[in-house]
Amino acid sequence: MAGKKQTGFLDKLFQLSPNPISVVKVSDATFVDVNNAFTTYFGLKRKEIIGRTPLEVGLISAEERLIYQIKLKKTGYDRSILAKVTSKKKGACYMLFNTKRMKVDGHSYYLSIGTDISTMDFIQKAQQFDNLIQSLDAVKETGVMFIRNYEKKNPSIVYANQEAQNVLKINPLKKILKMIQGQESIFLKTPEFIYYVRNIFCQDGSPWKFIFMRRLIDATCMTQKLKEFNLTSRECQIAVMVTYGHSNGDIAKNLCISQFTVKDHLKSIFKIIGVHKRSELFSKLLSIS
Picture (cartoon, rainbow, N blue to C red):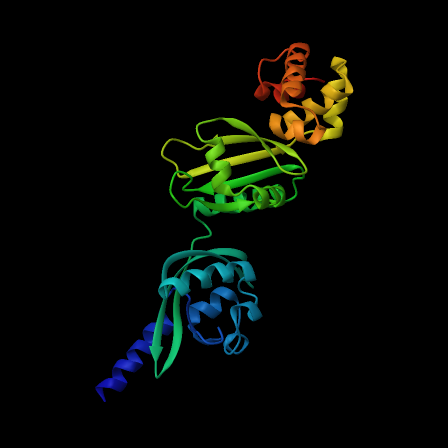
């Protein structure tokens, strides 16, 4: 008898809670139960929710759901996970969820309690960040990366637009971070392009770093710029290859000449263009209008 009274009391607490609460079956991600605050918040009836998944009901996007699931699989619970949800009444909102995996009568469930935080200042900043990301996704010929814990053993990419993803296929993140360590900018080459990579730090002590990679002129355009210095055809060939990072040995092999000849050409090129070493050559060419 006491057990029934306790169960009834817990049911009342479940329904009377001011926070949206849901119980989801782990096996198929369908709702088993929700409280009154849940139906009120999302503007739905129980019959529209029970037996369906959050995706089917339209409460959360596939991307948000995937992030949620990855975190839950690691520990079986998650505290204060931020998720963007959709309410029939309020539209897009932000909630913090505390979720715990439980086993009842041989079946596994997720119990989640949500707190609406859409009115908080940092959520408004998150919405602004969403708008920023949408803008960066549309940027062409400039790669953008947001990196967290860049000074630690395993830095993570929080965001990379398409151009940045293309660069990362050739140059892994750790390689780029090693190259740019302690420098404000570097030049980075891929088989197709050369990028001017800018290193932007956040405030002291912040684990964040922003990296911008602007696509620069290609070999054809480079050759045209070199012609402004009245270089010979051979000197133009060598200068372009140097700019793209080829060693003297590579140049000699590709052009079927000796490395001594390459060195002699480089001395002449540097003198005509007005630089003293290979690393200055590309910067000098960029300054030509």
